[in-house]
Amino acid sequence: MTLNRGSLAAIFRKNNLLSEYEEQEPVFVWTEIAGELGKVARPKKVQGKSLVLEVPSAAAKQELSFLEEEFLDKLNEKLTHSKIDNLKFQLGQFSENTGGSDDSYDIEEISLTDEEREKIKKALADTDLDYPLKKSLKSLLITQQKKRKVRLKQGWHKCPACGGVFPDYKCSHCGFDRREVDTG
Image (cartoon, rainbow, N blue to C red; front, side, top):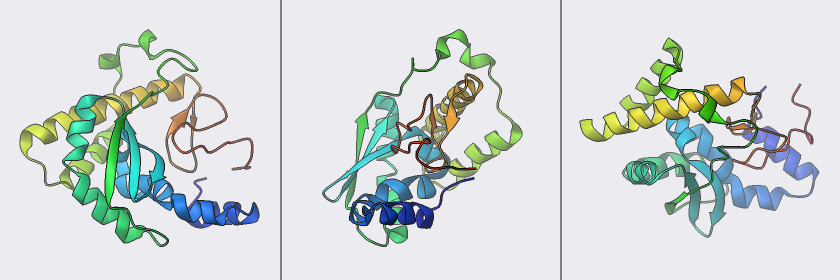
């Protein structure tokens, strides 16, 4: 089961935190608008009129910055309580060693399904990038998807709120705590 924004708003409202939800709405909308590309950039917080996104590398930071305007347009179109003027890409800690090490796998030996490859292909087709940037971004997305598969095999959990994966009870992407909500 995936929690939609309405469910999230209801949870925040029930706990008298609706104003915090409205302020941080872009964090919750990010995964919805970014699709496969959003798995490379984790929403961390809203800071003024900026959405701060954590990325795994300088290469990802540079490549995603070329898509900033496209992401901003999609994001602001979906927002109901706020407006974001810019995206801030920051190098972040991607929990590489928590809950099992990815080093026990050769990432080149992990295969993707046709469906996973098609999602990446579609995500890239929806951009206006030139060939070298598209090729680089495709490689980055494939690597991230392979790491995700390894982590899920190691017992990590898929977040019903943002779709990220995390090793224990609390999602490092959006702060969702699976102990607080029964997701059935």
